[in-house]
Length: 434
Image 1 (tube, helix red, strand yellow):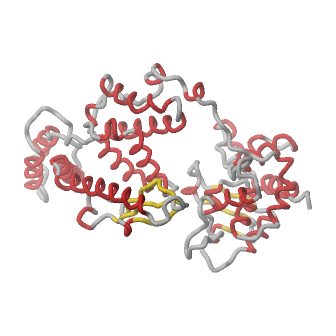
Image 2 (image 1 turned 60 degrees about the vertical axis):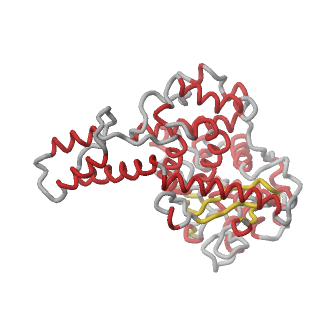
């Protein structure tokens, strides 16, 4: 299994391309999963190979089930029927007790293809009576992820979804037919997933609940199940479990007090390297680390002193314009111009890694005192406590959604002139130790 192992972030990772025979059933392209074995603990990959062997065996079984099972054939037939129905502009099938098969439906539709639809009512009758395949929760979750992956800005989001459900949910409900996960027995199953982790891993448990709810809603919208969602919180699970805030109070990102920023920036500028400059740029723009790490030169307009982050990379899915101060522009001019990425990584054609900024903080001795995201809170505290900046202005600067009542008044011009001044004031404060 050594050919399926790669080194990633200090761990051995299992990576395998989906074979051509299974590509039409598993559209992930490449399957990745952590072995949870540290390279430092297993430099020759002895334990990692065994874990990879087990992961590969499970993957092979999954692929065979996709192709050979009766459920897989039912899904293929059903999807073909849906496609044919769209061409004829008729409604999707409704599950009923009728014993007529999808094969009979396809035969009926095939006879009508290319002909006047004068027998439309009989087609609808056959189509509405077609039985739907019984999908398991795992199959629905995998299709949900594939359907939503194009809309997720972070490529790792799909992996995190699958990994979370694999770790905490599939062993309980993965092989359960999704039409059986309704109120009653379905609630019992959901509680079996959540109760073991609700008190010790509350944040994770809350994510698992939300993801199970989303998958079950998707399955209902697709017609694979009916009834209320047993994973819904309001009016249901909130009667069975204590609120997340009661069990695990919100923990804010570790942030450097704004009074320490000038000294910190002076120390940061004494460090060479792309990662240090990316962190400096992140602080000067009060941007999220993901927005900075994936920034491209094409997004920078130096004459206009503006960085435009596309909606796809923004949490609120809205284009965000960031005024650039002199110091931020100086950082840009220090970066190599032969890369599409503003902050290119060590690997050709790749940006900096997710951990690069946090590693700078660790080398500066601040690993336990501050995280990159915390500098957004530092900026917000500075703006609230040291200047007479309107709340809407500060919220817009860090790309938070402005309340609906003021949005119409403030959103029109993004308050760009005032935001340019705000970022210049923040720059002056950051530079005040020199």
